[in-house]
Length: 153
Image 1 (tube, rainbow, N blue to C red):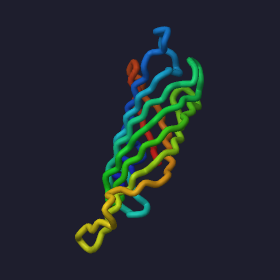
Image 2: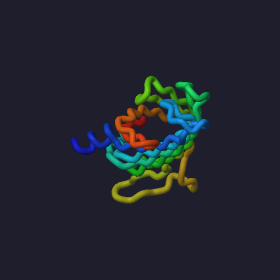
Image 3: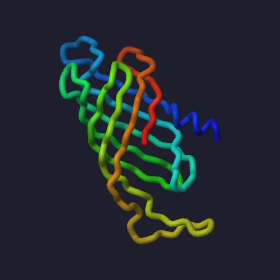
Image 4: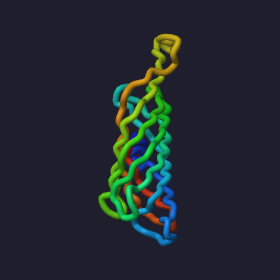
């Protein structure tokens, strides 16, 4: 159990930032594609699972701390779902950023009865409003690749 907790708290986040338009490296890149994989925990189902998240952000200016973007994620567990969202990211300093993205979560609409699964209705997924938040600390920089822990909610 403690290994899953460490996995979720420090899930691997790999971010690729494209070079800025003038070809020089800046601490605040214009484009970012981020990929995050790791453990997940459902407080509703009290179960561990795994998750995958990808996003694209575009800074509002060359040296802006603000960016807008889109994201998608998939969680595999008893409460499996996928999420599509769009929102804002703010970079507090060179390595720490916070993203808030309202969107739509599509929940698996199956009901567990004993050891079997019964469909509640004909639709497999139920859509509902959700907000995806993430905090990323870019601990290591290898050229345009940034590696560091991420916590998503």
